[in-house]
Image (cartoon, rainbow, N blue to C red; front, side, top):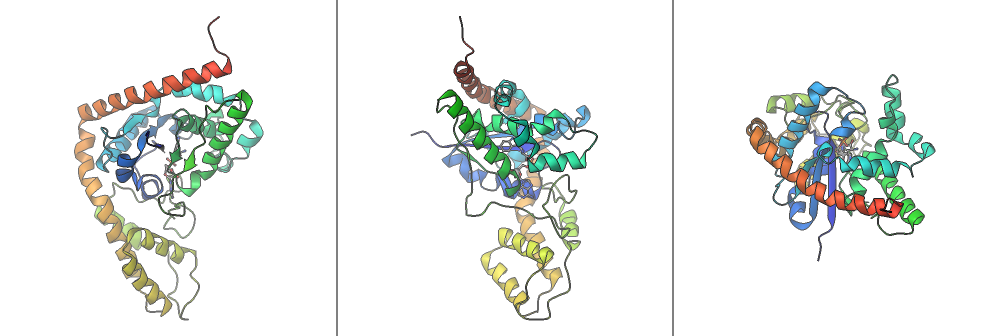
Length: 331
Ligand code: TYM
């Protein structure tokens, strides 16, 4: 039986941060054995906010090296760069004909970016969710591992798929579901007290940060007065630290800190160091492998070409089917 298809992507706007890792990639080492996994680097998408030719290539190269350093195995899954599969652009163009201005303008990410970059509200920004849907639907992906912030985009991809199937009376498009290994979708908070960790928020802990940098960033995390009443409500910055602790530390460690919170003996310095140490257990080995992989251009090019070839073969076939359905045929 065919394995379910998993598609995952990260925009190439710098290094991987903990939000990317825990939101989208956390389970991929196991997943690549059980699913038909395709992981790509969204460099077209990066142009909606950062159209800078001098950083495009190094940014793609870093993420590719980080994927590989984190354990992505190009012999078990397809690893590719979005722009190496230009068929995506045709899929996107065709899908655009069934995406409406009203729904695109209402997208949270569009409104957010339009506010942040008022001098560059480009059409790519508006149709960002269509390109993302094309990335997914062109693979007929069953699952997409994403953090909470991308759920709306995924919902739109499902809508586009349904609309297309309905319009052309077909079951060509597969409705993608968010992949949740265990329960809740993840939202990695920033350490500045509120909101998510993100590149545009400027509050990231990068997979590639040195130990001392990670520790310093955690030490600076916003906290509050220690509780004076047993079993008090936590405010947002403390809830965020406990969220991190639950994600990265052993359950008994979490229970110890929760008990210390409840009996008011908690020391925030200890809590932060515990999380930093447990994060480093994950990121340190990736960082150590990264430099060597990044330096090896021949290897990276080989992986990239191999991935592009496999992805193009799949996508080309699906775009051709889409063209046929939409009426592009020989006389
Ligand atoms: P991007 O590059 O912003 O983020 C990549 C992935 O990381 C997740 N993520 C987070 N998860 C939890 N907490 C956070 N603080 C956090 N920050 C980022 C995102 O949810 C995402 O899963 N539009 C996508 C890239 C993309 C894509 C796709 C993803 C393009 N086409 C097709 C999946 C499928 C984006 O900007 O992600």
